[in-house]
Structures are given as structure tokens and as C-alpha cells.
Length: 369
Image (cartoon, rainbow, N blue to C red):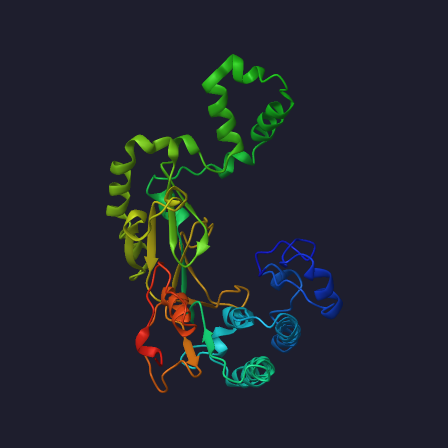
């Protein structure tokens, strides 16, 4: 299992009986969690940060070689996430077109990080080729990277537009503390029985940062895209409210002082399936170098430029990534546009397996038949 595995004590290795043997041969192995970066890593000290990333690369390489020799699988995937976690805080020192580009740091990252990683990827490939000289090798990224110039806080926009009613100041008062305490010790729920909806409204006003009963929409998340959910309390007016919000969302461009919204999409347009109800009702897709957040700001009112290294996300994800295919089943010197959804069916084609019925297609033009 990868970074979403809880910890080393969890059942993140299958079959489970392999776990003991794995750790006997890989005692330093760790699950890399993103939370480790700020808690344990010195990401603001580049040379120290690179040394820590080198350790992760070494541990991952050793584990991959061990597992291959132990299992001799037909298909093996190794995930090196370290590229992502150096590109987020140090993108401006990797991208030569960035206004804050630093040649000295660029040279250090290239020599001590990328060259180091390349050597270890080659080490894994060479190890596998000893037993399988005719293997096909695929290198693929799940996204690319770009500079991060501005973060737009959708919480502020929804508050300013009256779609979310914020309530933070009342929680801080002595009255708020008293009401929350009274509700906590009210074992028999007498206040609710005596004052009914009036108590529920009072408790909400002094305990919740959002007045849910008055807020048709809420923005959630801190990703590139803006995720806006309809409050189920307002489901009877769903169509009217969604149409109303979609009409005013382009005002984000005016408030941000430039075009930040690439497009606005309802979930039904791009998604389907049994979990559709779990997805945001509206997605706000940003222009390049822009991200949307569901949070609120006390400064800047929804328009926060990303200027310093204290913000880990100096670089952000970009839709265009990379893929490299190499091996006897792949045409030499051939290039083509390929979607991430095409990777799985294309790998099936390389392995001469039946192409599954999934999103994406097998890129037969890349394959040597």
C-alpha cells in the first residue's frame, strides 16, 4: 500500500504472511505520508531536504529489488513520489522561466536529486533485466507541474455572495462558551425539549463556524479545482440555486483582478456512476497557475498571491504529464497524445491481454504487433 496506508502496523502488505519477512529484509522501510514533510522534514533547508529525500529513494529502491527477486511478478510497479514533494516547494528553482529562478539551487537539485533518482531507477531496471532481458518499461506521471501564482478562497466568495453564512466571531464570545457548555451538560436534552427549534438555532449560532440552516452552498478542499457542494437542507431548490450560483461565479475574475476561472462544470457533465452523490455539485476549473480553496481568509478577501517559501505549494499540479514506453512490444521513435485513462488499457495491449472495458482506450499505434 502507498501513502494512504495508515501506518506500519496496518495490513498494508498482501499476502499478510509476507509482512514479517519483508521487514526482516527491509527494516528501514517507511510509508511516506505527506504530513511528514512539515512535521519531520526540513523542507526550507534545501540541502537537508534533499538528503532526506535521498534516504526515501534508497529505501524504496531496496524494497523494489527485494520484492522482485522474492516474487518474480509478471507486472511490477514502483512509485517514486519524491519528485512531487520536491517540485511543490522548489518549483521556482526548477522552472527556468520562473521570476524567482535560482541557478545555484537548480544545479544542486539536478545533481543531488534528479541524477540520484535516475541512478536508482536504473538500478531497479538493471536488477529486473538480469532475469528478464526482454522486459517492457513504462515511466508515467499522474500529472505535470507549473508555477503557483495565486490561490482563490471560494469560502470568501460564497460568503460575500450570501451563499454561505459565516459565524466564526460568535463562537469566540463568553456567551458562545456558556451555550456550548450548557448543551454539553444537558444530559436529558431538556433545552431541546423546552425550546425546540429556537434552542437548535441558538446552539448552531454559537457552536458552528457555518450557519448550516442559512447556507445553501459550502466550498470544501484545498486542491487545484474548486469544489462546491449544495447543502442537502436546500435540495428542494437545487436547480434554482445551482443556476443562480453558476451565473455569478464568473465574478471571481473581476474580484481576483484577472481571469482565474477556466470553466464551470456541473458534476453530471463529467462524472457518472453509483457514487455521483458524493461528488461536488459544481466544479470550478482554474486557469493555469491558479488554485481554488474552500477555506476563508482574514486578509486579501479571497485572493492570496503565493509569494514565499513558507507556502509549501510554490509549484502546483498541471494536467499535462509525461509517459515513456520502451521495449520489444513498443514502436521505436513513436510519439502520441495519450490520456492517463489510456495507460491501463495500453499496458493490457503491451501484455497481449484482453483489453478491459474501462475509461480510455489502448493506443495501438504505439505497439509493435
